[in-house]
Image (cartoon, rainbow, N blue to C red; front, side):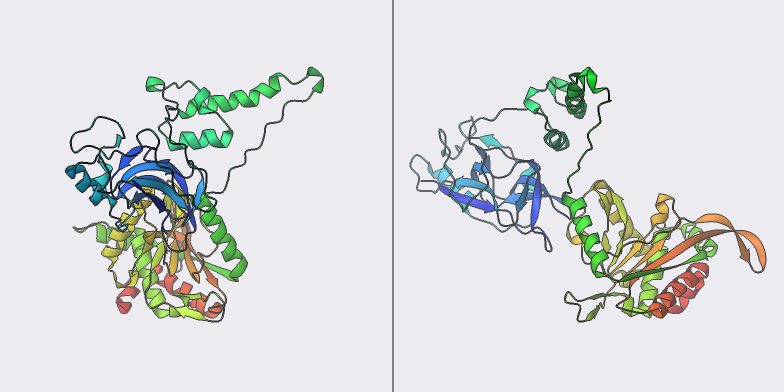
Length: 448
């Protein structure tokens, strides 16, 4: 008899308690290989593909697209045929025996399995024959304690929608996709089709409203649910605002010499050096001078942890919103190495390919909000970090330079810190040292 194996959602990262189903990659009745990705989920950290450690026939899926599944809850069940099943030849027995072996999850998606051909039970396939289980009635999953209702193992209604974003929009707006006619190729349902259906739903009540009402129909407010990354950001910033007594100080600085240094460095052969890389180098030098700011307060508030390494987080705009990738061991990297890693993580943020590891573990954050065209900010600390340096846009301004009025490249630096780890003197000393390095970058030679 086939053996039904239940695959539960594994722990996908540091402290994550669940994940939202973005897209199912297999159907009920489909044959899957060991380590083949079966579902794409969105956590508070990243979007990842989850591979199944069993090979066999999918008998049930748990959770619809857009639904959140807790870590440890059932994800899929797979019927794995044993080698002793009747009607299974030696070749098939060997194949199913190897497929039955459970393997540890090596990552969230395996390159070889993405290209694997998927086939359904009962469909024609080359030798060896597919596992002959659940042809008429797939094996029912073992009954877990109050599980989520699985998808019925019957032929589903095929809705011509490819994009999970279109499915999500339809679900949130209460649009029945089966009732729509798609305007895309081969009747594919597009986002515009769903939006037209939503507009028709809103307009319908207005058209039947009695004329005696005399008032224009009031548009309904949209409620956007907090999910995934946005939910995680809201919870983290809320906690930071509640728990950390933060204070902010700022100073305007003349960045003319720093920009001139960057032009000199980029005039020589080799990788280009960004302003962010130079600021990151200044931060690591300043933290070596003021180590109390590279710290965090313990969970119970009874002590301060001073970190031996600088794991530098920086704000980056990605397709999922603002994220904070982390440059590991920033203090041990050269300016050129910092620039290379900052560039790599920035591209990963834009493409949405950052891993949970690359988004956690920071000890200090550098926030270049000048890229948004603003001068200043009072940011909320990235809990549990104790400090954050913000940099505004660098613009030409009138400035008194060497006793004369001149046009200089000026920026504003703001520094937010946890008042529990230091007082204003330490914070002011850190900010003044950073400002001096921006105005006179040659000072860095004393620290290297």
